[in-house]
View 1 (cartoon, helix red, strand yellow):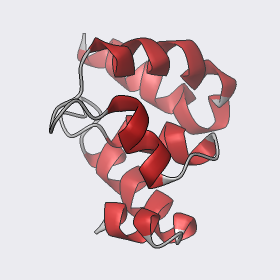
View 2 (cartoon, rainbow, N blue to C red):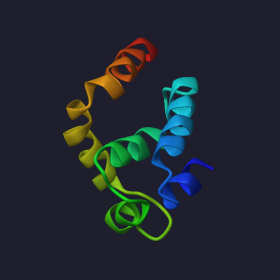
View 3 (cartoon, rainbow, N blue to C red):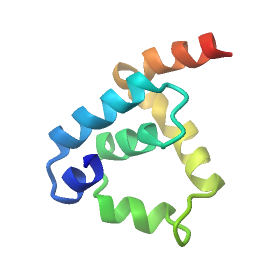
Length: 88
């Protein structure tokens, strides 16, 4: 549903759901953090897909992109970094 909200340019609602998903699962096997970052960077869903979708999957490019950019949003990801460190 969060992605649907994003596709419909309802970014506030999309972020709300994605943040809840990430908080309940900091290991983030669904990639909520990538979508949060993209929205915060002003990307549309279509731009995100064009940049990272490789025929239904995402490759290492998205990991590199996330690592290069998430630190620009400490208000969004600082808690997540700590949570990941605790998970080990």
